[in-house]
Length: 449
Ligand SMILES: NC(=O)c1ccc[n+]([C@@H]2O[C@H](COP(=O)([O-])OP(=O)(O)OC[C@H]3O[C@@H](n4cnc5c(N)ncnc54)[C@H](OP(=O)(O)O)[C@@H]3O)[C@@H](O)[C@H]2O)c1
Image (cartoon, rainbow, N blue to C red; front, side, top):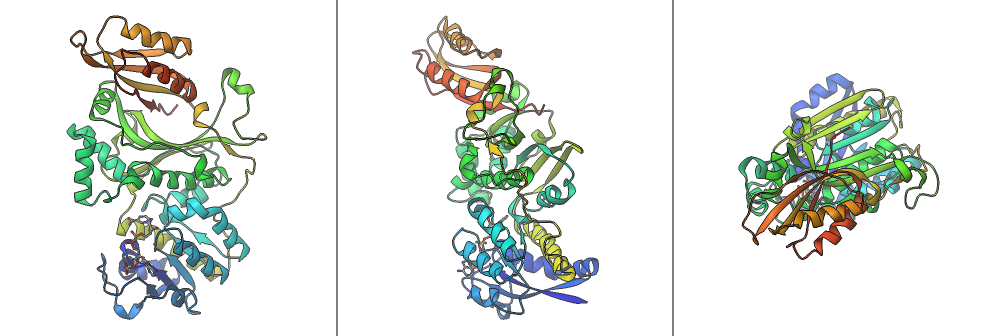
């Protein structure tokens, strides 16, 4: 049986998971693909670091160049993380014409265009299944399974930490800060949690998926992002009362203009082409929608193709074993490509829509949940409604819990479809009303229409 030798840089959570998975299921994989994958070397920072699965000392080195430049290494897996060393490792391997596997979404988000071009230039391939949603084979689904579809909508719960926090806030009526502290103790959130809770990890993944689905490289700077820090127990409870659940949602949607807007071009877009919304923000989704039931650290993606219709993917988005499963899938593809000499059987990322553009969040239209903290005096609701009315923004429902005259009470409003820019301007005016006691909270609503 033909043999392909793997060299790994990184033997931590993911790297040691790959080592373990290969030991467990390497023979099964070989029997399926007709190629034996053998782990030749693993580069680590320090030999005696503790790892989720022990790797024999004899397989380790502390010099990554030893792995990449070893003529016996056919495929390189970059499992180090970060954007500096990881970029150097991948470029060095690609220059040698070696296929590379990476799990590194931060790197692809920042330098993906350059790395895919380098793979193309050196006649080799860059595989990245593990970079988005760990064990869910969403990259393969978009690249291969849906190759005959235009992806019109993609909604993703792609950050396990945020989903864990929001699920516990909903089910236990707990506060954000308390759940975050507990998540850190349980190992579901980092000591420095901002990458996750401010939405940047989700942004990296959604940018990769948007680029793949729409065929032009999405600049991460054009992706609108809001995290979950500002979500309170009260927002979650009022949302529930209205029939909604709050989720941090990555949204990739073909953008369509309505009414007078239809005659205008999107900001910064010189010509016609595919215009898409690419964003990450806390979203109210109907309780009856399947994504509302995705709890704990699980990830899920709801993908709509013009031919296939609606599809759903669910699974663990991170962790040593789920992520190792994705690396093994890439390893099998790389081994088969080497076996058959088919370097670009399925190209990693094909730009086919060079005139594509991401629209500004101000142009995106949706319904809204708004929570105001107001003084309970007659005429308050009328003042707020007047400002929305002047901006041509319709109110669909109101919740105003009874309070004592003069006390601060929440005022909850559901707004009809309106552009983000118009709602933001109206809320700035509302915030200046003397009866409004703190900054308005606005959460967008998604009805999956
Ligand atoms: N963890 C997950 O669940 C998950 C899920 C999806 C994607 N990813 C991505 O997978 C990648 C790896 O994540 P991870 O969680 O496995 O990280 P990790 O546990 O911190 O492992 C990093 C590995 O890189 C090694 N390393 C660091 N600097 C090195 C150097 N200069 N030379 C050689 N080796 C070096 C470390 O060596 P030592 O062991 O000696 O410290 C360690 O083995 C990241 O890009 C991450 O975003 C992770």
